[in-house]
View 1 (cartoon, one colour):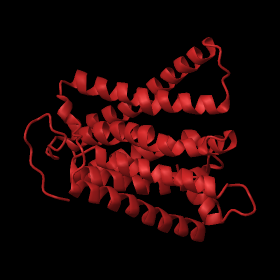
View 2 (view 1 turned 90 degrees about the vertical axis):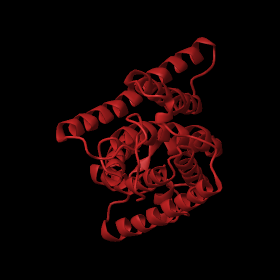
View 3 (view 1 turned 45 degrees about the horizontal axis):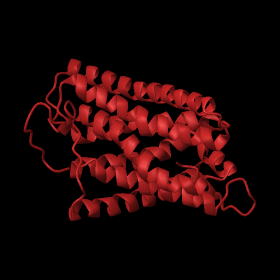
Length: 271
């Protein structure tokens, strides 16, 4: 990691000189922000679903998926991020975001490719060492069954990547970075990000644990590129492109069919 300098106390790059009590409080607050993000996102999704029905539309599986994406990543995470910055007394520079420079673009490409290489290596290790297959992502499977899988590709870039990176990298990793080293903040943010996916997984506990372990890999990569570039647009693009490709694989190699390669099928479930 590059050496970091601190311009103000409001910077998320303030270092790791905080006392242990302050560090514990920072972890608890970050965890609370993660939980609140999902709670608010779920509440917004329910309101949107209610409005959808009130307007006379049928609440199909595809409608539930789309309204859930808009409510969770599109609105809920953003509301919680706004509230954290607003009520913590920080300026909105707390979450640095700008049009990616040429250097940033290199990190986007490098982070995207690195995430895939490392996840592929992790999947090879998992399928070699364990007999249990990674758990299935029910959201991705529902999107496939309802015929909107290809629409999830632009949604990944426009909603999923930006929304999840805003909350977990911009707010959670940024707040932890004020109290911990770069590596510590990245690992802690990942420890909160990857297990959150258990809500969309089906299968045994061992299968879910394997999937969450593999999901930690791209999260570490996204955290690293945010630390190096200090521009939220970079991990947001990395994440969005990564998920978009996974949905593309899901479309190209449908899981649960005899023609599906075991490794590719597992790879396609890691959304």
